[in-house]
Length: 165
Image (cartoon, rainbow, N blue to C red):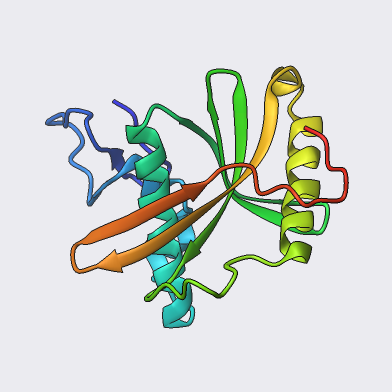
């Protein structure tokens, strides 16, 4: 049985009579951290929407065969919302959750793309097992529509200033 130190049992695992947990969690949401789940999300409602969008994006990637390696990874003056791997490619994903999509408004600035690219390079440098993988910054746009999410992925949003993977 796979469980966390907080007593949560990861979904898909069987319960035993000896230990019935107080709650079950989805493996994607469980990665968000113990304190937020147990003590509640005290952040601004927009942050809660963003976190839900990141969870939806992670599930979307997993359903398409990607393996999520990290979430909310910070370094080099930037943050990577999701690091995922599939078939020799490591994608450093920036997730933007929007209630509406404005077709003429860029979802991510040049400076943000640069920070994502630097953080992605730092992640790969700290994880030598993935040094031979191609590294690519991706953008995932998530828009909630009732109980479902519209998700769009834009591959390779590297800045135009000579960033190399």
